[in-house]
Length: 278
Image (cartoon, rainbow, N blue to C red; front, side, top):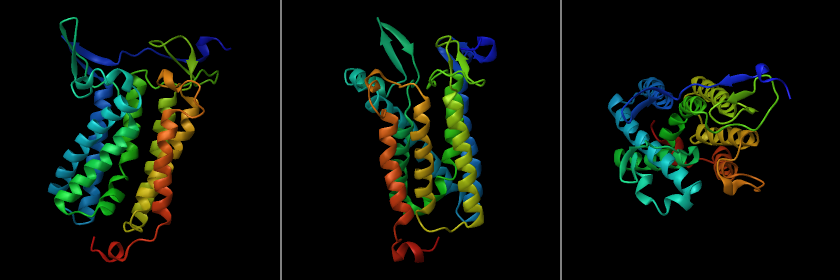
């Protein structure tokens, strides 16, 4: 094993500042940045395709709530159900009472697969209310989801969470708040992968802004969740129950999304999807 001097030491306080029980975290800024950048890019798409900014504003509210609620419930149900089944309301509240004292906790624990389910659910509700074609809007929305995911993973890096397995590579990182072991910066691996996926999808859309309905959504599912499945091999399991499993929960949850992506890529669109005015 190399000397620790050969590795990157990460000991950043995840809180930028704290006043009383309230603290502003880098993760919160990354989460906010994800939505701001996504909104700017989606506004460009909407204007290019003759859609109103008012429609995008409505969509943004649905997606924000769907992401937050879905990611939160996904973490609580998929990863910590043993705890939350006995602390049900803590899944929805950003605080808890400990020994009679009020403690502001925020929403510590968000799962990307739950976020994906939440986004799809919110999108379905949005389309039902606004009479917007689901596949059309989903094909456009996935253009920005990867870059939003990259922001979130950078936030995870600041939080020293979702850490990688031990490594002796020169770019290994010692997360001082966790231990003194050099590890794969798995969060940055994912962020880079998501940025590459963003570039691929955006390039395809820029070249042809009316691809086969469902193609961009399917390609997004295949690329993003294949990357997620592969990169899980470099990460520590998030929960104890995953120990001894051949594939962890993140990998198992990725498989259905990949399968749906393959279906969307190769399916024959219905005549009304082809002829429908965009």
